[in-house]
Image 1 (tube, one colour):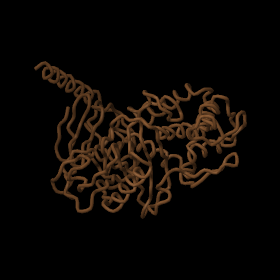
Image 2 (cartoon, rainbow, N blue to C red; image 1 turned 90 degrees about the vertical axis):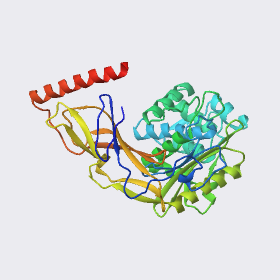
Image 3 (cartoon, one colour; image 1 turned 90 degrees about the horizontal axis):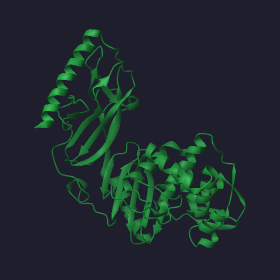
Image 4 (cartoon, rainbow, N blue to C red; image 1 turned 120 degrees about the vertical axis):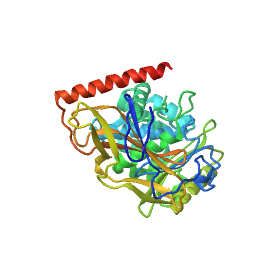
Length: 408
């Protein structure tokens, strides 16, 4: 059920949606696709692409961003995330050593002909060295050794990958191996790759630094980082490239300029040069064409969520962690900015201050530019018996009306 009025919440029994007015700083304007007015005429030759601002997740540009594609070695971002999470949870340590099995050596090592760190068969390699081999050299043998060392075998590690993906909100992506080697069931979207990159950068800064290393030597063999952005003067410090015949050339990159971090993903390009050039064009365009605006200040009420059985009928909502809500806006923008509060409602009392309640979805033109969580600005106690009875009666009547509407 969708209803809306400026900066005021109206409610449905299952999912409540509040429509906020177009924000006053911007005039009504253009529509949003990858090549329409909202993007100022910018186009990329990459078949699929996305550009986001890392701090807020604001989508600055997207093209076929939800299309399922083969990830190639970009899947190793998910492999790395599982390893980082295991380190964070204390289940493994960087100095722990894993065996280079026959499977890891044959499938991902020197005999494979693919990306490898040339780890020696039956040798012991520390997790720190294996993960650097994966990040910097795109080492398939390193991926398999990590998978076997952590989960016992690749299949169980893949289950960990998909479980973590769902926990992180990557609902469309599916992983079938830790290397990204071709498999018809292994698919991702560039939108979810950008979200994964954002999570890694934000959650694991102590490990993210490895993505900016220009080279790594193992078994006396020095290999360069394949990320072309690192050699360009654009502030790039990560992340990963990928290539197979099916996937084409792909790249997840991140760069910082004047304190602003952007994340770019391109996939399906025809050459190493094209993926680097297109990623750089997107980053340059993002850095030069956008500015950060505060939509709601710290602790500013965004809207209200209806309560059931509370001492009051609704609870005010603010940005999560009491933070300001920002949006990256094109300079001299004329696009219409619309925001909606979406939550499961009515919310049952009591409610604790800081309790997460729904999300604020912000559209720029027709594109969802930002989704950010909201929380209760104050605590609300359970109401009196009379109040709870009134809410129950109201909800019962509302349910009858909704049932009647559904039958029409």
